[in-house]
Amino acid sequence: MLVRIVRMTFQEGKLADFQTIFDASKQHIRSFPGNCHLELLRDPDQPNVRMTYSLWSSAEALEAYRQSELFRTTWAATKALFAERAVAFSGEKLEEIIPFGRMSKIT
Image (cartoon, rainbow, N blue to C red; front, side, top):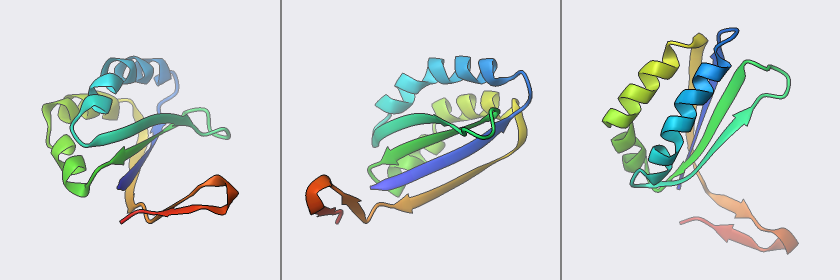
C-alpha cells in the first residue's frame, strides 16, 4: 500500500476555485483503478493550505493515475491557483496499529 500526501498552498481568494475543481474530480480520482482511499485535509494553522491524503494499491497504480488525462487536467487547473510550489511525498505503509494492541503488518 502506498500513501501519497500532497500539501498545497493557495493564493488568497482561490480556495473556492480549488474546492470547485476538487468537487468535480474527487469521485473520478477515488474511482481510478488502484485508488483505495482519498481525503482532503485543511491545515488548522494556515487557512490557505490544503492537503490530499490518498492510498494506492501500488506505486504503479499511482504512476498510472499521474499519467492520465484526469490527473493532467485536474493538476493543471489546480496548479494555476498555487501561491507556492506544492510539496508531495509518498511512503509505503508498513504497519497499521489497531486498537487493543493488535497490529496488522502490511506485506
